[in-house]
Every structure is written in structure tokens, then in C-alpha cells.
Length: 109
Image (tube, one colour):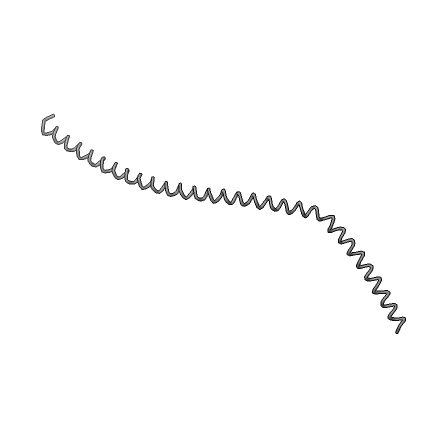
């Protein structure tokens, strides 16, 4: 290989290295943009996770409150049944009294 050929080879390899270096710089810039975007997405995911945690806590609080209400309502069921029976008895008494009133009104008339 002559000195001229060697010089051209070095020049060619130098240009190729410059092209490769430029491509690597482009890739570095792309990776930096991707890293920035990834950081933004990660921040959004963390925000959503925090909101999900709050919703989960609120859900658990609601479930606990509903269980307490159901427990109280279960205890009131016998009372409701007793009140219903007393109401039926009172209705019977009112009907009987109404009948007696009507009978007395017929006698008087």
C-alpha cells in the first residue's frame, strides 16, 4: 500500500468515523428525549397510583360504614316486626270502634 492509498484510506475511515459519531450524537439526543418523556410518564403513573390509593382508602371506609349500618338495621328488624304487629292490632281496634260508632249512630237516628 502506497502512502497515497494509505492517506485516502485514513481520510475515508475518518469520514466514516465522523458519520458514525454524528449518528451516535443523534441517538444520544433521542435517548435524552426518551428519558425525559419516560420521567414524565413515570411521574404521571405515580400520581395515578397515589389517587388510586386514596380511592382504595375511601372505598374501605365506605364498606366499613355500610357494614355498621347493616348491623344496626339487622338489630332493628325485630323492633320493626313488633311495631308492625302492634299497628295491625291498632287497626283492628279502630275498625271495631268504627263499627260500634256506626251502630250507635244507627240507633240514635
